[in-house]
Image (cartoon, rainbow, N blue to C red; front, side, top):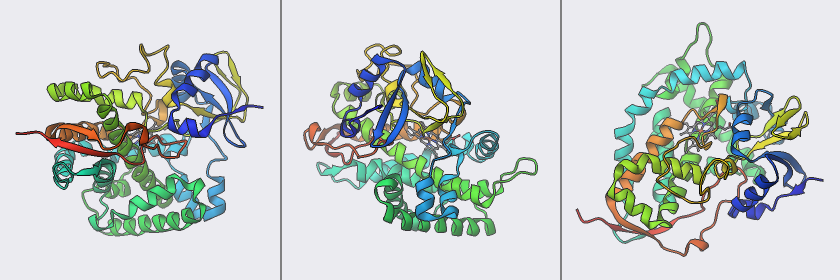
Length: 398
Ligand code: HEM
């Protein structure tokens, strides 16, 4: 019988659990919730190899419960996306999205993101106690991905509710059905509008992008937009929220950044290493027996690649559990590795750099408004993020 991991501890402080698993070996059979048995890969080198191993592909069982709840058509629009595709489908979809999601399009967004960051901070009164997740870390990436896709400003608030329910789908089945149906219908309507009247935005580009005679089908297009919306804001929100929490609990690092802004890019990488917003990669499925170090994973097993654990592997990182902005290596696995390496990594890095520079410009110091031990982590085995981040900022005298 594989041992059951204590879910509450995995949510609040996973690192001691991972350290114990790493000490035993590179992969272990565990239950991450009652009845759900997986093999967890925990060491850096083996995790990186597993992410690039073609024998570890999409789990055919993925999304089965959702099809029971929402029916096949909505389920396909929600789940049959890039992250769940294997080659050759993945290769084709990735080539098409990469054409539309170009570096030029991302870079062109930088002035808009800076302006948005300043506007969000302008709304906070000096000395006011405020939840920076709600007022900054969440709206910034949500607005950015909506702007990029060309979602009209008046509709953007809808995505917050949809996202909450969809991320915690398994825990809120009834609401999941309503939200998934509403979201898919919305994306299909918007696609029809953009098809008739293309604009200078990513959705219009995704509609028109072509590879020889190939194009995204309607279902692929909807699934791609849904993936981009959620992949694009839940993760980045937690980079900003958790990253700021790390700086507030390491005030000397805040001071170092204020003194030398050239450290900001490395700081963003260390935040991603130290608190990877995706705890694990999406579940993989062993199509054949797979060797992970000295452990043999049997055919048909579900494999979880623990990105947070790999990023804290003592074999890879000196003082692995220290948050240290002086590290300059960006070889962490927070964006994954191999064919599914994050499409949005350049955008997430850009948003991180802009957001932290905006905060450092404005505030001499920021203090937590509650003791750190009172903060709660969201109850999710996929996403690592705080429920709230109440703070009080002291504005810099210019
Ligand atoms: C894939 C993390 C931001 C779009 C991934 C994967 C990770 C990841 C770990 C691979 C998962 C796996 O292999 O199972 C992150 C983090 C982010 C972030 C930590 C922010 C800090 C974004 C943004 C976008 C995005 C801003 C888009 C606007 C995607 C897409 C994929 C992906 C489309 C699937 C790629 C594929 O399957 O080929 N991301 N992501 N991500 N990410 Fe991100």
